Length: 292
Image (cartoon, rainbow, N blue to C red; front, side, top):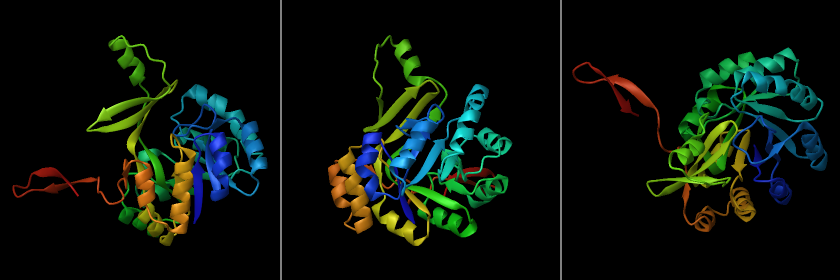
């Protein structure tokens, strides 16, 4: 088992890298759910700077035809460097890697869809050797997946959790409708007392759950399950908080200090909360949807 960092910035990466086995950064204009976007040359320089650390590249946004045209030479360049793999969402990128005979490992990282072993194994047959598991899975479901697949598994255990992505420009549309002028880079959407983080860019809108995932106890369980990579997402968090988290997790110092430092705005996510609906027949033989 290894610990990976999604850094909030390159400065954050420099401060925190000694505590991690590797890092995940985004390919410029081709990634979401990271605050660090780099071109191939910058990625090459980063690998040279941290030669003993593993490097994974996010190429995980929904692609347009023009994106795939721009992506082709970038992948050809990336394939020259000793990266440890690409984390991909759009199947079009997988097809592109085959056309250019891309040699580095590929991972299925399609956010909310990596939820069962059968689909993971299907994509393994298509060329993926890794999968970044959905944050909506319970600990029992993760254990079942681990038993039923041989691919390398990634699982987030700390940090803000992506909730959804929309191609619509929700902030811009809202601002226009209510005649609001706001040039902020980060917005908030409050619901039931929780302020969710909202980002908008040229590709649409990304929303993160307003509480920080603190899966300290689950981290220990996932280690015992032999999950290959446990991911700490440092996006939008102070460097000291992330450093405290990795120290507490690895040295078994407990979760209380982390909760306290985050003003108890923390969550264990869906690790112990079933979210899937199944269809069953009621007493009158009608089909009804009920939560599991």
